[in-house]
Every structure is written in C-alpha cells, then in structure tokens.
Image (cartoon, rainbow, N blue to C red; front, top):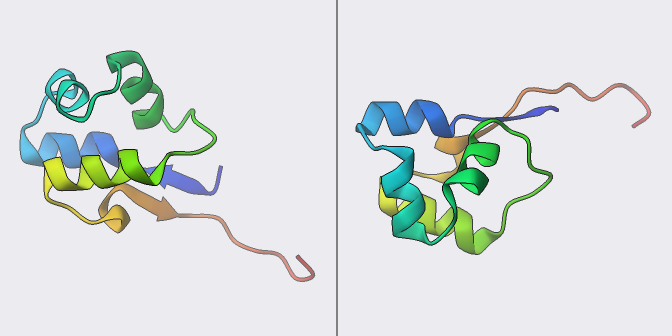
Length: 73
C-alpha cells in the first residue's frame, strides 16, 4: 500500500502506550493495532482528529505517501 502509517513511531517518540491511546480515543486496542500495522482500508476523520489531539501531532506525522504514480494513471 502506498500509504505508510507511522503511528508506532509517533507513539514511541511520545512515550505513549497503545493501550492508553486506545482508551483515550475510544477505540479497541485490536483496532488500534490494525491501524498501527497499516492493515486498515481507511480511517475516520473523527478518529484521526482524536489521535492527533492526544498525541499533539499533525496527520502528516502519522501518514506518509510512499507510492509513485505511473504515467497514464
């Protein structure tokens, strides 16, 4: 997938445990784990906003585009 999720990196930089983040934003640890691994097809803006508020970061700190578009696409 061309979108890389850097949530694990940001959590480590902030010294925040996944369990604490999940509880604070109201999602399960299992869903947060799937998000950290990049195994989700999408994320609600409400969830992204809650993560950014809790971690005091920008969406671009959590997500990065690593794909390249080929001509004609």
